[in-house]
Length: 159
Image (cartoon, rainbow, N blue to C red; front, side):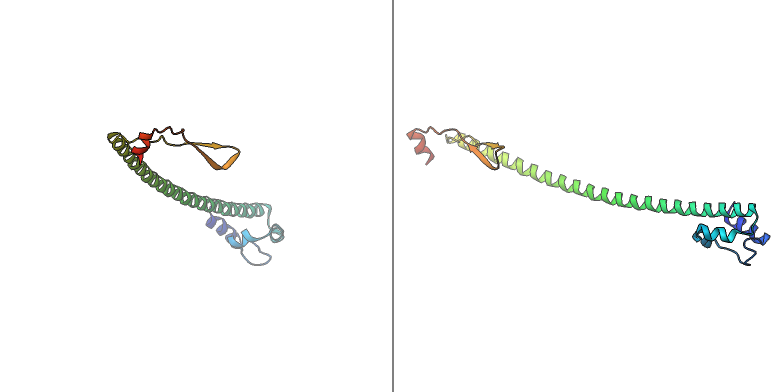
């Protein structure tokens, strides 16, 4: 039954709360405690009590459903906002990664040019250091290089 039909039927019968001579609104019906409702239902027929309690349960369920919908929409907004933030972060990191890749490419090109220059001018280039980290030295880095065995002529060409 719809809200209007049910309340209209009770009003026509004049039996909503005949002892008190008043009618009750949906808001009042929802907000009544069980004790208050039972006190007000005294004097009504069994059929009227069942209809009124069913109406109250229907109204309360509508309220619960509305609260659930609101909560779900709120959570959806929060998750969409979080998703947008994460997407922006991914985009930012991607741009940062692209910049680092360009810098790396530029450094590789520069290193290759320096190697070509060194080869062209017979300049001996030391191998890059080997970085070894040790578990016992968490904050320290050990750098090892191969021993240098320069001849006198090599030493003259370096300086």
